[in-house]
Amino acid sequence: MFKHNIIIIEFKALYQILFEINNYLKFNLNKINLNEINNIDFKGSIILSKFIYKDELIKKKKIDPNQIIFFLESNEFIQNSNDYKYIFNPFNINGLVEKINIKLLKDKFNDQSFIKILNYTLDLNSRIISNDVDNLKLTEKEINIILFLRKNKKPQKVNVLQSEVWGYLSELETHTVETHIYRLRKKIFNKFRDNNFILSQNDGYLIK
Image (cartoon, rainbow, N blue to C red; front, side):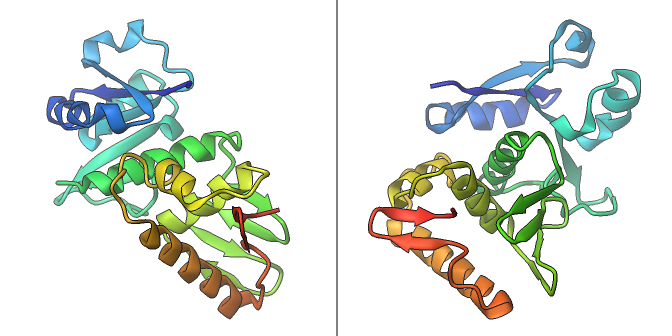
């Protein structure tokens, strides 16, 4: 199975944490120093870096900021820090894997911020789904579920969602997945009165 590349820059502790669970991850891990950047091809990779290196990476090294997930310290302030491109340090490993997963799924849609799904528009930056009448705020997990179901044309079983959306959490109970999807379908119905956005079938869940 093809694995995406994750490049960790000047963040040894993060590399060690992810290396410990590497067997459960769906991407390859690489670590480099700042002085090695000019020798690396970053095309198609996701970069994990401390926020203090932002100017070095973007302005000096001309790396596409859409490829980078920055780690913010509690004393660092940035507008829209809840965006999927930022995560606060110390971080929750589950939250980090979610952000990587949603970044990988977003890349499958050619890095568009706005994705058209059925009669809705999904704004990945603000995490809002909307139609011509109303809009609804979603969580990162809900965005991740929608994108995964959208890119697959066939119904997806709970155990597949558990593996692909929840990442390495192989011991997650299946009813947790079902609860997330139930709540998401309920939110969609309550806001848009739409019971057919995510279809529940005998062989799994589906967005047509």
